[in-house]
Amino acid sequence: MKDITWLTYLMFILASYRLTHLIVFDKITEFIRKPFVKKINVETSSGTKTKEVPKSLFGYLLKCYWCAGVWSAIFLAFLYLLFPKIALVLIFILSIAGGQSILETFVGVNLKKVDYYAEIEKRNRV
Image (cartoon, rainbow, N blue to C red; front, side, top):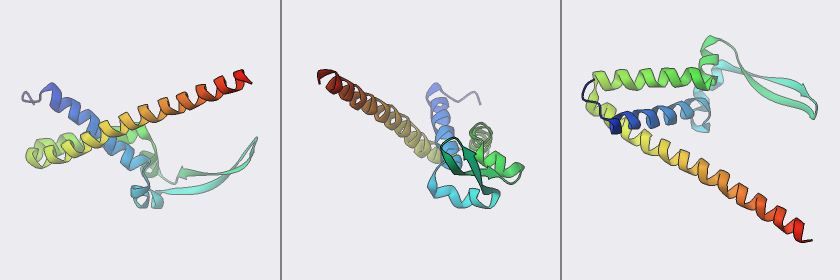
């Protein structure tokens, strides 16, 4: 553990972030979550909406971002301790994807802001 540099630690953080997001939100891993969640109809002020809720504790762990984050960090840490060379390859790939997704979110949000402010300015001219 003494050999972990700040860069490796940052890679762990980004990899854990991406792995967590992959487990909890991404369409590609929906087949993992599907047996552990059920769909229910919820009445809202705007009508009826379908919502996914966990069927069990394990389902809750797969749907809870904070819970899955802990488990993905534990998984990556143990993988690194047991098989450091294999783990570093996975961590490297996930950290690149994690960094990219953070940048994409930042850019996407700011592009929406630019469009929003342009629309406001356009309305003020009229």
